[in-house]
Length: 160
Image 1 (tube, helix red, strand yellow):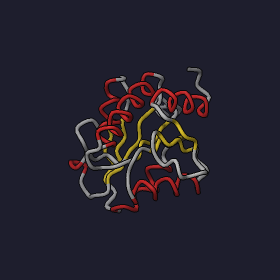
Image 2 (cartoon, helix red, strand yellow):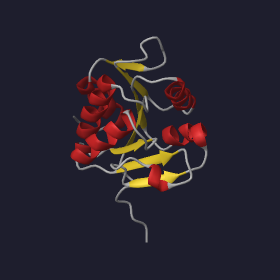
Image 3 (cartoon, rainbow, N blue to C red):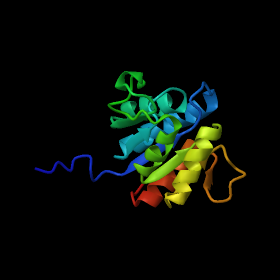
Image 4 (cartoon, rainbow, N blue to C red):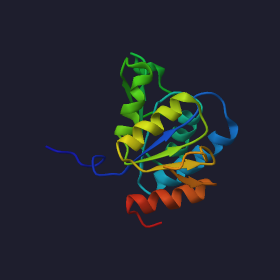
């Protein structure tokens, strides 16, 4: 028996710094909460920083969260991850994060975030940079969580 409850829902990946970054975390929380309220599942790397904030926002928006973890144990996931997937792949799991999303929201981050943006573009996934990554010409730019949500829902074919 096929359960399509989650299978047919659009998925958004939230990528950004795993370290404390208050502005990026606030934007990720707000965006994920609103997107979850619109029926969009949350996919991320499952750890701290932007990932934790996005999962917390999604839970506050009554959404489902999926964390694709770099390590070998599901216990490494932040407390807001509903479905932890331990990969044992380290940073190579970044490709899996964006592969499992229909759209990617990119926040401030470093080389790991940049690798996820690269994978997303190679996989022809739309990338919306939220108050970050302005120097990248292949991504859509949004200066606020509200604008990112508007662009994202439009790309997913969901009326806002």
